[in-house]
Image (cartoon, rainbow, N blue to C red):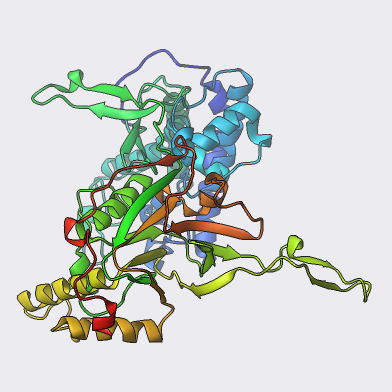
Length: 513
């Protein structure tokens, strides 16, 4: 077994780990897994069974060593260790992370507060990514691998066997496994788990951490905090030495307002709405997302993409879920969301037939149309803007020798604005597209959730101009006038609308029909 780099006083009695993760238990787990291999039982869904020639050798043994991600038995042992440590008052919550929606922090803090009896929000498996569980579980696994390499070298073989059958000759041949080798691996793995888990040996790989779902920042766990895990970043000074590296703890998350108000202008007054416009040239006209920007899997990434499309293209793109929302007109407001026609408030007992129900006098919403959000987006803009995007895409395709943004030949992109108009109209007829008419030059006020949290918009947005209705779940709103809202609830970002679309189009919709 390789010697530790740092040996220091333990954070707690290592016997708390030794009593549960014993050499006999590890040897039993390994033997049971090897027997399962012989019966055709896989250790992990994504890991293939050892080949016939690998059965009974160190190749199968490497896969059979308990790993905290794959072995439910090891997870149960680690959880039992955490229960005792919590009972001793040694575990502390993650100071910042829950406010960012980081699952690992949410589950760890719930466990520290309420123990294993708490109902996990995402599943207890998330806590096995934190420093202490990883130090125990991965320390065990690595020690097992080290013991195999040492046994191979003691037998005069290379530390690693060949990858293919042709390479597995001479020093790279497979090594037979016996009970003595399994016992040696189990002893080394059990002791290493106790030493790393108790902090007596420093485990250096705990720093790998989650990506913040709010900001897309890649976070790290502090190597120095097993019982009181902390998220942050390691700062590496330019030209400095490793001893100059410092850990910087993240602070409380400065969350944006839950809702946002953005103004867009319709030069022609004709608005088309879809999840995406799958028309030749549209992708190329929009352009690819900046790879240096935050991922759209994060709230910040969604907001940056929405802002980019508005300011650069005049295109509104609102992130949704995989849904089929309705566009409902209510006065001068368009509600885009879900109508629950089975809601209790819409039905009452039939006075003429007991046991039957009839509709109340609450009117159904004025349905304008629907959008099928296969792309998890709702995208809309004035038809003149959409034609500009199509024409820009056609020019980009032509400049690239007929090849589109996905590296394939693209046919059918418009050569003229009249062709672009025809493509738009044909696409609207053949798909779930909403077409709306306003006066040329109309400014629309769009109210949406920040960070792409469209499913939370209905509970967060409030305005006396639009009373809540229990049977309608708004995803976002479009209004021809600004709504009265709480300034602490709705962000006014002041995004720069493209100047070229500030005035009504000279060729109005009647000239393009």
